[in-house]
Length: 476
Ligand SMILES: Cc1cc2nc3c(=O)[nH]c(=O)nc-3n(C[C@H](O)[C@H](O)[C@H](O)COP(=O)(O)OP(=O)(O)OC[C@H]3O[C@@H](n4cnc5c(N)ncnc54)[C@H](O)[C@@H]3O)c2cc1C
Image (cartoon, rainbow, N blue to C red):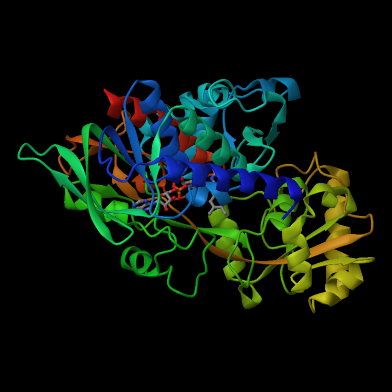
């Protein structure tokens, strides 16, 4: 962990601690109750508080953040000043189109439109409402997007959570940690107004006079639930998720009549640590910057900027279900983080003086890798990749400057696209498409926004946008 990230995590811990101290145990009634203190929940809490609601957030862990905390912190926005400065032209229809195509036309177009239309607004919100320094935001491109539109704060998800938490603190939102929601309860008219929770072993019933926002995340770490909905994603798959992202919010919502959709749509992230399942940031970063992907035989087998599911599936079909990212010193630069050192210690990432040495480290036939790289460099020279149609071939450089880097990866479960059905107002719908009074949802607990395959950077946008809308509407 670099010192900056360590510093941010200390800040998060302090905010969590002070938040816990501030929450009076007897307080169980509020205008708005938010369940889950991740990106979507904290955004909803801030917006509800800004609309003058009293807000209590319930969080089952001792700290806030969920998957948002460990995320790459990138959200997409079409038409930002960052794109303008870098000379990229983008539009809402282009981003909507990428998302719909990327999800195999299975997403709900209205929800996609709502999400994408708010991209620039939420980026401004991050700066103007949360106080994030504008100059510390960067621009990047993720797989499946036509142009670079990924906005990222310097210290990824840790920055997002610390800025969200700081604002909730300022607004006087109470976050009750160690408080696990176990049941939603409706009154005789079907209005959801109470949450039964387990607070450090004690049953507590919370009551919301205006609305409840469910923001409990997905179910990527719940093997049983994964297999129930899609047997392919059994225990052989590791996960990038926090171990407590187990989907009970979805079940709770179903018990009060919520409809769910797309539950079988589960995404594996291709570039993960083959031993722990964690997202392998060094190789993932390198692939977006011009590295190549090869198999155990030293051959390319997929276009490097392909969709996640295509690379994941392609990798599973290779020898040992393993792929390797190979790059050179022009690309390596800034991502040699603590994670890279750990991967090197475990022989999953290697720095080599020659292509042959890189190959031999992972028992790849050296002459094959040398040949693959030579062929690829010719394609770079010609600005055309006849083998895989690499889309950025005219922007990347040849891989020819030592030291070289090679890192092993395997796919692991990353995102669950399915969840409770919502409308564009973040209202939870029942099987008849009727809104369930009092109940709102945002973030990975919901379904229908990403179709079969979520594009990188669209989940955090989803959290911000629907968290924002849910918070405002629940406060009404
Ligand atoms: C390693 C990694 C990297 C990623 N990088 C990116 C990225 O760069 N860009 C992008 O767009 N997406 C990324 N994603 C996906 C994205 O981070 C998640 O989809 C998003 O953070 C989910 O946010 P959320 O608020 O819905 O849930 P979470 O952030 O997971 O928060 C849910 C919270 O609810 C709490 N909770 C759950 N159940 C209960 C309960 N019963 N009672 C009380 N509390 C409960 C949890 O403890 C947790 O704190 C990444 C995901 C991972 C795992």
